[in-house]
Length: 276
Image (cartoon, rainbow, N blue to C red; front, side):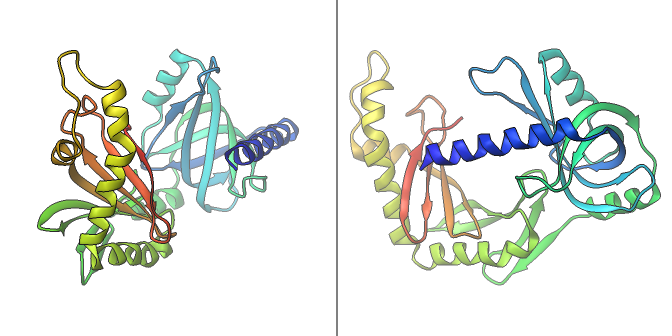
C-alpha cells in the first residue's frame, strides 16, 4: 500500500515537471502565507526542494486569485538560506514562475524561477490585512480556540483527566473545523478508556525498543510501570477524518524525543513513534 502511494506521487511529480517544461514564464504578484519557506530533501538527493505557499496572487495585471498556490524550486545549501531570508511570511512579493493551475496534484502549483523583490498592490494588501486578523472559535465544550495559520490548527488548553493539555484542531480548510471538533468530543466523552488504550499501546510498541537500543551503559531495563510513569501527555491533535495524535514528553526514556501515538476513532491507536 505504501509502495503504491509513493509510486503514484512520483508519477504525479514527473507529470508536473513535464507540464512545467511546456509552460512559459509569467510574472506574478502575490501574498506569502504564514508558514513561510521550508526546505526538504530525501537522503539520496543532493539538492533541497524549497517550498512555500502563496494565499493570493495576480498574473501581471490580471484578476485576483485567492486560495493556495504551492511554489517549489530545487536549490543548493547557500541558495536555500538566501531564499529563507528573502521570503518573509505574510508579505507581498513579486516573482517569476512557471504556473500550472490545473495539474495532477489538484492544487495550483508553480515552479519558481526568480524572486523580483517586494510588491505593492491594493487588492493583495487587502487580502493580507484580512488574513493577519486574529481568528478564534468559541466552543461550548472547549472554550475559545485560536487559529495558528502557520500550522493550520486551532489551539486551546483543555482538561484531560485532571491535567491541562494542549488541544489542537488540525484543519486545512475552516469548513472542516466542526468535523475535527467532533473527533475531540468522541475522545473526551470516554477519556478514561482512550487514555488507557493510548498508554498501553505506547508501552507495547516502544518498551522493547527502549530496552533493546536506548539504555545507558549503567541503566537497568525499564519496566512497563516505569515507562508509564515517565510518559507525560502534553498535547492532543485531532483531524476531520477522525484521526488523532497523542503527544507525550518521554521523561528522558529516549533522550528527549517525544512519544507520539496516532490512530483513529474507528481503528484505535495504530502507530507509536519517537519523533524529534
